[in-house]
Length: 254
Image (cartoon, rainbow, N blue to C red; front, side):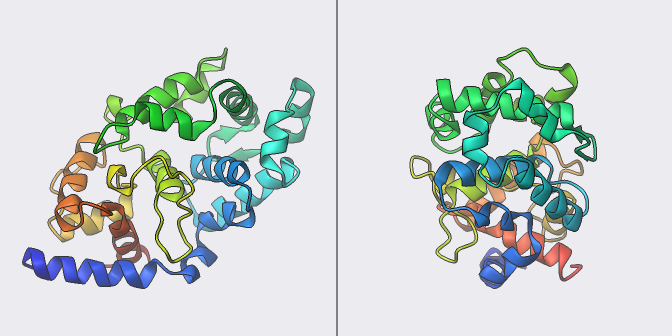
């Protein structure tokens, strides 16, 4: 396919999947239950953190997480104390367990009370055309408090050559304003042009078949290569193609 044809094809697929019906089977449905900015942020961050594996399982455990937080995430986080860890007893999603969850809530509390919230951190450390260095800085600040070493693996670092799929997905949700009601676009201080595609097995496989990506591993270097290809198709909203790549891979078995 020539670039013009490829752009037309992917624009069409992105528009097809970037619709409200997408929400029904996607973990993004969990933060869509809320209207308060901080509730959306916290729900989205926690659900994105456990977003690997079977999507039904992610949604089920995301729902359980919200119940543990009394379906009022921000209020729970701000008022959290050690005695509240009892609510997390028995929680596990893959390798993310109640110990990890306890620290994540404590770290979020620290970020909201002492750092102005996650948007402020990403805005402060964002670069003109990328948020990857800001993810690195966010991770450092997130683990600023005493914490179990095992918990660090649940927040990826692009500067250690990770594709950081889940945190990039969270950022897509927060920053991208799609006019279709799927992504939230509530972080007005950042630009869609700064976003990177959440690179996973599905989007990576389709990207390689379309010659958008040649590197075989889904790592940080592959993300840079894919970002470069997608920005040539749409420099202002490159991550809309996540819908096309994901939809082609998951729903069409492309």
